Amino acid sequence: MNQREQMEQRGQWRITVWEEENFQGKRCEFMLECPNILDRDFQKIRSIKVDNCPWVGYEYPEYQGQQFILEKGDYPCYQAWSGNSSYRTEHLLSFRPIKCANHSDSKITLYECEDMMGRKFEMCDDYPSLQAMGWCSKEVPSIKVNSGAWVGYQFPGYRGYQYIYERDRRQGEYRKYNDFGTQAHSNQIQSIRRIQH
Image (cartoon, rainbow, N blue to C red; front, side, top):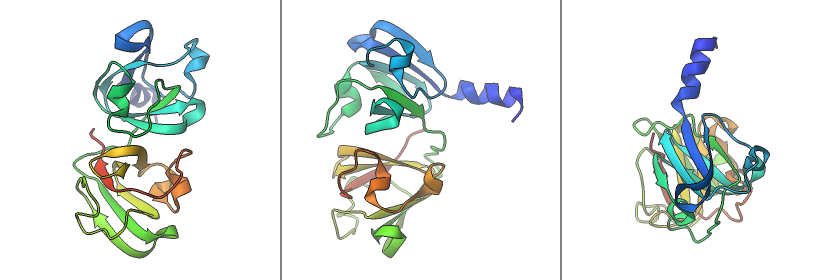
């Protein structure tokens, strides 16, 4: 990639973070991932503005812990990013852009067994309830992202723990629930949607 392409790519993602709620306190703008906000002399992130393109925020440094999808918009406090999550954290300590999000061209395959085995269901639309669309279980043991980026939720109606699935991570293959993220305690996924770009 030449220097011009690198500069164009950097400008595509922009996020501004504040150390306190309601866009108060120390602030910093990022165009690239941040594995540990503590290295930037911040104690925590408590409010966020996403200018363009989606990001994922993490509860702990080095992209560990609970994941939170951050699409374009303002997040004045933790309730704004945790939304209907049954798990809430009052701060984020690392974040990165989601580079493969493409809302108009997203496709994902759910499998009834680990290692992408058993009955499968391909989808390219948002589903607030997987069971309502015909998935017979509260669990999704493995997933293959064919294109784009998705966020899966523990409960129907886009509630509960959030899990980010991307085509350009892990080659799009999530062979068991431990692959969903460091905070994944089960393979319970009951709603899923495309990430907005």
